[in-house]
Length: 274
Length: 312
Ligand SMILES: Cc1ncc(C[n+]2csc(CCOP(=O)(O)OP(=O)(O)O)c2C)c(N)n1
Ligand SMILES: [Mg+2]
Image 1 (tube, protein in one colour):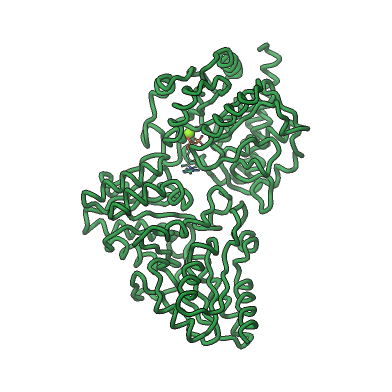
Image 2: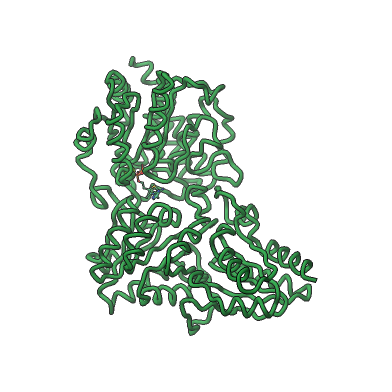
């Protein structure tokens, strides 16, 4: 990735953060932390990598993405809106009664959302099912999945892990948003999941660990993952919860937090300066 | 403002734990939501946060119970019921153990968490478990009393717990019994049977609306949905000849289902059921959702009028 591309992606990610914070602040409460920590990986995938068409959100040969940590929906909505899957002003309706943009991802309401999620632990199995179906249909499409580190405590992830390598799902690439926090505290204090890399590797996955806010590392890791055949890939993203948002960064309380007008203004000003 | 219902829950557990060292509290990364942090601080060795792993939590609770502990394990109602159903059914109930499972954010109170987090089916699922006791307190006083009774009860209990917000409908000295509904208002024309923080007040308001039209509605707080207070339901059905159930839940499987099954077998009575009509949840404010699922006092009153029109 050259300097120009890098700067362009960084600019987009800043804008994605801005849109996400604005949409959450409109109602005054939302899942800020876990949305901010995956702004880079989703920006890279949707703006630089995935084969998608905003005009045809269900196009057969598109790449799919399952946001298993469905509470981060708002950041994906900002990306989809920016890509043109729907009008930008839909973002103002986040969580308003009758909306197409509910707090957790819903494949029936939002163009561009491939799977309904929100009950943690279910997304990776669904992503594997999609990957197996695509293989049956002889499509080259890739399936991406994003799970949380707290979410990794759900046993179903490890059932999915075992079966994905057993079924040789080489078209499945998953990310763990390793932001080190869950609702009740830090991961290591609530329920330790380390050593995460060793766990995935021992389940037969190709495993990498990178800085999840660094576009060059994300690009390199995704390319390497795609060069591996017959094995699913896990890319562990070392991230900061609330990243890039002044009042949320690194805070446990950023999980589902009230956002005031003043906080929003302050955060947007800081984003501008960057 | 009074105490949040969740704080009543935690305070009651703290009070029980003072004299009963078998009381344990389990969470699955929702301690901050249930509000049991004070318990963790007071009794760190009797508090277990298992992370995001509800099925494991209920399995652990069952094991604790088999060694004589009294575990109270909580999650959002959707996950407490749907995610742990087999563990709760088998390890806790079929094994005849003593697990108190708490499902918070009943029905529309899940609000902005939306359809994935909005339990309209938990009571229905739980009613299928033999001998399980199911309670849904409607205010601070009944919450404290029912949590105490749940702890004392030998056997598993499902507690449908409202979380944020406070309301007090009962006098502090009111006595409660599991399986005995409360008559909040007597009446002769129609009986409104309600449960929970949202629907009991709506039923009371509906009774006021009906009173203005000269319809005298009785209101029952059915805080124990299982075992149902059959005697009370039958006597009021007999007396008023018309029944409307009011629940923040699907109309099938829960309170409405229980009352319909009883009356259908023993005393066929015209009845209506207020609750979600075979619909999934969605996001919105409480007011929006009350209207979307037709749970408001006006909806209850309208249902009562229609039944009375059929009766005459
Ligand atoms: C099955 C299930 N249990 C509990 C919840 C409530 N919940 C939502 S997010 C969350 C914490 C998740 O932590 P993590 O995966 O680390 O999320 P992130 O830090 O990325 O926001 C919990 C417990 C849920 N949505 N689903
Ligand atoms: Mg996390």
